Every structure is written in C-alpha cells, then in structure tokens.
Image (cartoon, rainbow, N blue to C red; front, side, top):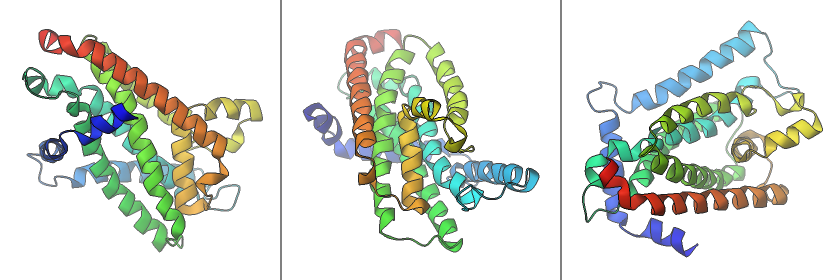
Length: 264
C-alpha cells in the first residue's frame, strides 16, 4: 500500500497537467472535440438496443426490467476499462519523448492515459444516469456505490496497463494482442447477454474474471439496488486479484524501466 500511495501522491500537479494536455490532444483538430468520446459509445448502445429489442423483439429481461437499462448499466463499466486499456498499452510509445528525459518520472505516463479515459467515463456515466432517471430509475443512495466501483475499475485497469505498457516497449505485438483481448472480452462478459444462460459451474468460471465484478457492480448501483456488502467474498476476491496484478505490473515496470530510453 505504501508503494501505491507514493505512486499516486507524488507529482500531483504534474499528473493533473499531463492529463489535461492528453485530454486536449486526443480530440484536437476535430470540430466536436470531446463529444466524439461520448458519441461512439452511445451509438454502440443504440445499435444493441435496436438489435435485441426491435430486431429480436426481446425487450425485457427475465426479471421484467427493460433490456436497454440492464445492458447500458453494465456496458458503461466496460467502455472505461477497454478504452483505458487500449490507450494505456501504447502510453510509452506515444510519449517516447518524455521517456527519454532524465528527470521525468515515466511512471506517470500510464496513469495519465487512464486518467484521460476516466474523464470520458465520468461524462458518459453522467449521461447514462440521466437516461435512467428519465426512464423511471430515479437516483438514490445506491448511486454512491458508483464511486467505489469506479475506483475499482480505475485500479484494475491501471494495474493491467502498468504491465502491458511496459512490455509493449519491447514487444509491439502486445498492443495487437490487447486489441484482440478487448474484442473477445466484450463477448466473454455478460454485457449484452445475461448470466442466467450459464449453468452454475460455468457461471462460476466466468465470475473469475474481475471485470465481471465491475459490470455487475455498476448494475447493482444504477438500477438493481444491491449493496456492495452483499458480496463480501467476491469483493475480497476482486481486490486480491487486483492487488496481484498491480504487484506484477509494478515489478515488470521497475525491471524494464531502466532500458526504456535505449529501446525507444
């Protein structure tokens, strides 16, 4: 925990400045700017709503809730994870000029990419909550859980990005593998299909994926009204896995960091 505290607390002003610059650079030159960061996920949601609600005429879940509400509540968690993972994996390649600076803390670079994705996530999450409220799922105290699950999402993807971004400096194929993983991961997690279609043993296997915890957590907070303390063992499992991934990411980063400038 001490390492984690130092990683986040050091150079706070630098992190904020870099996140701001990275956020501006991502949408520089486009007329709509940050709106593009919201338009793409919204279009994706509308496509799945049309296919599963209009095309297949399956507008409700087994529990009677609208399919679009169920899907949108979970997909918002995945959008943040996948966007941060995709952008963060190439962080050191994109900011190679900073890596070569002797006095710059290169460990901030993956954090900046995840932070930029977090801004987009906050905007899209706000839009989703507005849609839910207009659909009759009014805000209540369960929404406070979103802060916890967003923090979980941030920590998990940051842990993974620490590893993938470090290895990508030496093996550029890793970024391609991550792209494939994101494509497969979307369909391997109950985002557009319900976990009730799985048998008990198979569902348990799928639950071993920590992103499953995030998707269900967002749904619990936005409309299902399930408190986080109802899943103590699963919560413990998530943090054990996230902690292990963070330790792996930090170890890999520290081992490879001294040679980044030579490779880049």
